[in-house]
Image 1: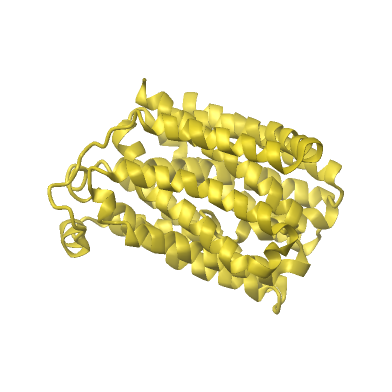
Image 2: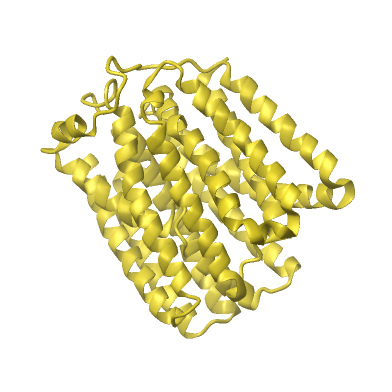
Length: 388
């Protein structure tokens, strides 16, 4: 079976299962509002800590020829995470740390090897098409599957819902059987000292870490998306209008994914990043100053565009750089671990700031994120310029 199609299917199925589990989380706990900032923040801190701990503790196993087993363990932990949510139901609020740790272990163990497998199997020339197409399909699924999952939960209850999750997990396990590890390092133990010595003289890696730190504050398990949601539900409070709102912006994401995969030229990346991020920051200030339907729609238009573009460009640069000849065969695990270390530091800060919203003026918090948006725009543009 074609590895490109297998990895695309694994990405899609992972996304579908995440949407399904999120439907239950919203049902039992995660109605994001001003009232549950503290428990949600604690959940996120537990989750991001567990993600990094899982990646760090499995780093040597990820260098072995048995690395695909880690992928399968991560897939099975998805099932355990889902069953835990179902078992606890509305009591999950009393076990937020447990839920966060389970989520973090599932994500950390899965991505401890998935990123390497994808960067090995998808060539740098194919990557823009791969990630752009995935973004388009993912956006369409974000419209369809919440409706399907909501109907299934309402009509069929736990047993049939569990059957769907088990089926998705089994398909993912089956697809993973076709994956064969490539570029198994000769040295089976990670050596961060050698990795940093090898890359120390190259400014591109320093620039990457700066960019990934800011990227982790805004995106990649950062708290900014939750804060945006709090603003949205202040105006679009009923589920019908919120559903329409979400669907419209999912279609915009789909269009951007198609444009990125098929039409966008790399020489335009820098200008698109800067313009979209500046407009996002300006409209963010407008929304904070005067929070109503019009300002929220304007902000989300620019936020959706900039978020989609930044994620696509950043993911492509990150994966392409992992195929640098100096690290491709021996130090890819160290490369991804270095990236995750930047993410971890940023996520702790981002979610810590989110918790402070329970005690501080939200306008101060938004000013911090606005500065980070502009800094990310500058650093990602600089990184893209160096990569050209």
